[in-house]
Length: 230
Length: 253
Ligand code: SF4
Ligand code: FES
Image (cartoon, rainbow over all chains, first blue to last red; front, side, top):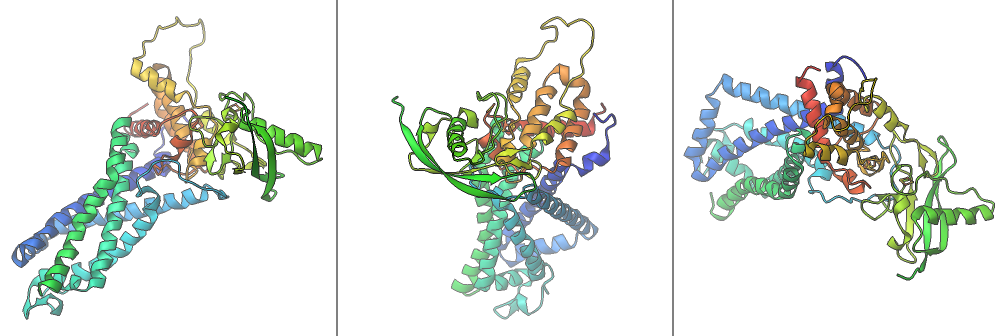
């Protein structure tokens, strides 16, 4: 046995990379929940929603700090998971002729890489759609009047194609999250066998709940813009 | 139950040596009594092959009573075949239907290179054990029995983990070819007991390092290992291994 404890060994280990993926995933999820909660203000109309957006903007350096944390988490998450994925693919060089899943697992686990890629593409689209949008420009105008970011969001989702793309993406988020919710407890080494299995059973339902929450926003915008005419 | 017989079609991975190309060969297994084991079925098929002057199918085996961990192959996508908590040597042919086709492959992992046909080299497991799967004991007189008290729940966890026979089915079943379940079982059996304490911190770091060095994948929590394990080693052991690892990061030895 190696006599001295070495941080170099620990930092290179697969266990630490799994842990990095899980904790950075957790940070991103916490952000996403906050983001969702804020966006629910959309239902209360332009004043509530734009007021919230402006308050966020007025945080100044604090906002940038939050962005830095989120960006760091995203970079860690992507690099840890991609490096693990590459390693895990290489660890079986000859494929089985017959493969089958014998364990009863939530759908999220085997689809992580696909939902992850969808989410990564979605984030880029999402930032260019809203974060970088001109909040007083033509895209904010509803009924001849600029409604700020509220208008941008509603106009954005008035396009059914974009609404559908968002809905697909948020279901990917839900599925992706369901894996985190089921696997986190093993990675962190925290829960008992029974509690972990209970989390596994809950995972898909929790993922669906998250997806439904996010689906509500484009559906709300679509109904308001298309059926109620803005 | 009356003993019947069944006939099967076998598609078996044949590979002459480590660096040789392999391929599936099809054989008939005629009139196999349903009360023989899977390995005995292969013995019968091999007798036939030898009579025809052909090379018999190579497979690992030793105890044939489910305790040594030598046997193992993947049958229709399941390591050790379809019956849960059962090694291939303990699997009876009554688990199969007459006329079935069985695809029989070696355990697949880069860290388990094929030696011949269904025989794979699992010495990577030995090297993980060498890295820390032992305890230090005092020389001198034998200690009194029961001199060291062990809480019951810890003893049970240690004994459950110690059931692992090192067969490698967990690696074979894992989509990542991860050896986490095996390594975890070998770490936990010592971590739970006072006898394993002197090396507790170094052990987990060294064994995980050895596991990574052999080229096994990481644990993505697919739970396939647990479903395949003939000794019903639980994923809980991986939770405990991760806990040990975190503990090693914050504690001095
Ligand atoms: S954990 Fe189970 S499947 Fe893996 S080597 Fe041990 S006995 Fe075999
Ligand atoms: S031959 Fe020993 S466990 Fe199967």
